Image (cartoon, rainbow, N blue to C red; front, side, top):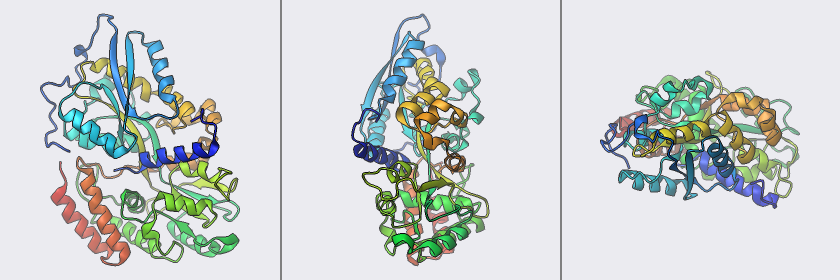
Length: 440
């Protein structure tokens, strides 16, 4: 995006890319790897110094970061050539293209990017290679990574993808109207109510309340902030708990309060961020792209008056729905060792630094936020509120049939907001339907 000359276009492109990657939305029943796959066997790769070509697939990269990363990798690994294959920009179309290709056990790609909600599905279907033996062999400490994306790529006790960059829900607020970010959800409601109407504001708080994936992200944040979850780390449905119900109840309370728009159930990221940059509210829950958009002089009326903080706390602290992308190895790759070398470089410190500087993506290695070159390229990354918000990231329910689970959540949370179900009834219904649908 650095090469784009028009700042307005830059902001729009960045916003679209990050929204799609943050909240986007096929499957076989066996976790066993096909007999045709290499299953992580390093010996299947060329070890005689012969040059090997691997194919890396991902969606369109408008930033040019991929070219820089590949060039540096090839310089350090002269026996491995990386061919870049551009996939559809639309996340759903990209997902379907991978499923079609991998369901046919194709080896035409070796490494490919995966949305944070895909690993369990692709692992269950046998599309991706377990990475544990590579990780152990090379002494990679997964504790060095933000644990939100690590957990999202863990299924049946194995690691199926490596985190590339992270996205998470955050609270943005007007610094000209708000002296201190609210600590709890109750604090937010109080401040929003007091400020609403000042300086031309129409609302107190903006969120995503439409029945779509964005609502799931908001629900995950409320539920987790009160100590609940939809599905736990053991793959068990746990939404019908006192903690989860308390989180759902707070979501319903906020969504039905006077501080949000009357038509909040029609709001996605676009409606939310538009109202915010037009100066209509002091607070908004949104993804990191909101910061750049709010400081775009060609679009925003609140330039220079925006700060960021973690989302408000419930009884268990703050929680932010995880977004972002990872990368995995095709289980049918004919060059698993070379694929791993590229994956390791791309998701390691050097590769993530290149992506942060050239692509403006937030690293999944927290130590990189101390790198001055990264901060110079992305001053926003240096803000304490931004880094603290990332630390609160939690994954959406890890399930091999995530789209079905997401749909169940969307329907019943929407019914609870509309008053068609109580939070208790919604939790019980989700528990029943998830247990019927969940593929383990």
